[in-house]
Length: 427
Image 1 (cartoon, rainbow, N blue to C red):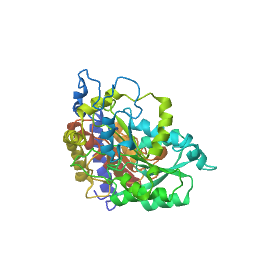
Image 2: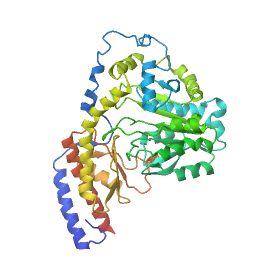
Image 3: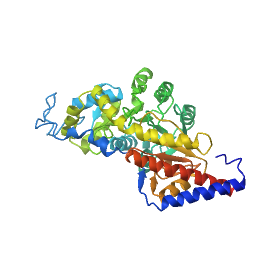
Image 4: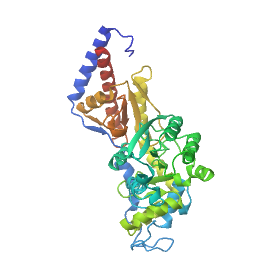
């Protein structure tokens, strides 16, 4: 479908044929949802052994009675699993409740209001006469942007590339803008592009603390550290680089088991330097007398070490891979020989990122919705919900069945074609 070289008659014929097909689908009153990257029921079932796994024994291997108060950093066994996931030392990690998003919000609030390393390091004090600013690679994760909005932190964007954020742009911004206090990162299977940061990108990010202000902090959201579809891929260890460059205070890492076991009842991890963790503990100790250690022990019994975690994730991959292959097959079959869309093949994570022709994403999402397929709102992958080119659409195929993904993608590619032809006719 070569729109640029098509005659008006050809475009009109395509529009009529596509519209007829679209109207037929609307009459079927389908109801499919590709909006959120949640585990499917089958994925959640893989961790059903958590129920009753303790068999009445609540004492951890290290001798902690997990039913009681205390243990602000969580039990050693859970911390060790988190340390293995993130590649840090045991003393550099804390295991908490189910939500890493909660920990990100908490860490950002502490950094802004109280300072991770005392009040002198608080962003509200280190950034004079303006709001603190975060760098946000785009397209990116909408909930990261929501945290910044909630805490009244400005956002500047840089493009995502096939190897991670455009580091030339990141470094230039930091050197030119003293209000910049941080950088959001999803380093492995980035949301939504599926990119894995290259070793060079990870090294350059670890060096940022050398050129940024003293309170600068990378928020390293490694949500998909073990969520491989086509075999385990190793991400460069940012903490090793930070130790080399003396920037360990400039990175905070996050991860969780929320898409590994039960999404609403997992274990979340936060890792950083001892200085940063001390600042976080100071506030955390006011909020809590300790996390859910019983749940942490349940997870330890189910996933006693990193090797068992990797084996568990292979079962997730068996369920997810056919769904992602289906999405990519439809995109390849319909758009590989034209310019109606761009996308990246992915080896893990929960999303496929699709770029339409400019100024069409909202139209495509609306058409799909009216035909019974819900998509993440256009613009959600950009700060303030504003995609300047109105191109990016995030596809999340994990929850529907394979048959439903196939049906939804038939509708999606039809909507892309219809919107593109109508736009060309209008020109």
